[in-house]
Length: 49
Image (cartoon, rainbow, N blue to C red; front, side, top):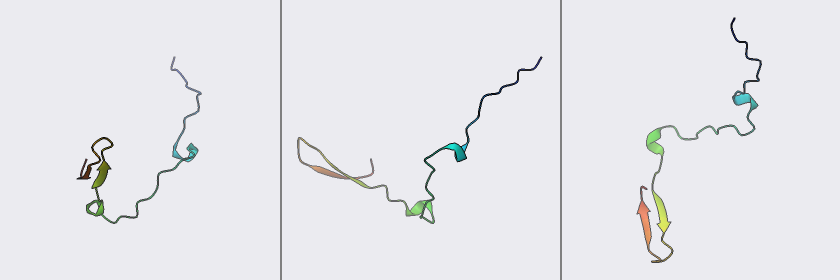
């Protein structure tokens, strides 16, 4: 005999936080550079992590 599952299944409409739509037109517009400040040496690094 087949098993019938009566549990509730959640979907995106059931989630309170919805993903934001991107304002970028292309993936080439994404800027990956970040700036890091190292606490002990007080030096900074700027680049792609």
